[in-house]
Length: 136
Image 1 (tube, rainbow, N blue to C red):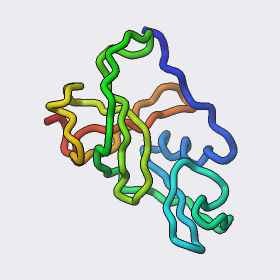
Image 2 (cartoon, rainbow, N blue to C red):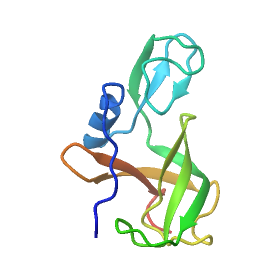
Image 3 (cartoon, rainbow, N blue to C red):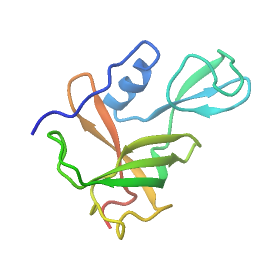
Image 4 (cartoon, one colour):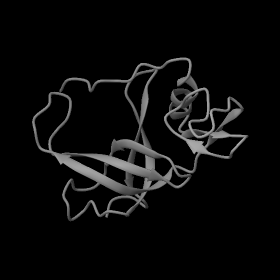
């Protein structure tokens, strides 16, 4: 199986990828307006303040939306879910759902999820999500 396409860290995203390597999901929060956001950037998307900090997120979220891909791809075994996860802290993140059947019966909207980390290379560990408490 081919390796999946991987992100390329930048100075603005290094803290995020360092966190995933350490088994942490890291988000940013603005000191000026308290907005929590993702994806990483050096300023708040709500108020444009650069007074922001990185913190360890809970790793919990809910399944907000998804599509099940059935088309063949050399890096994935179909079917697989491409999901929009609403994190407990507020931001949304695109990811994959793992450790459960990739069916509409198993992928219930608003189901609780938890992050798991999938090491791809020494530099990149991907945050994926599974049903909270393990497989249904």
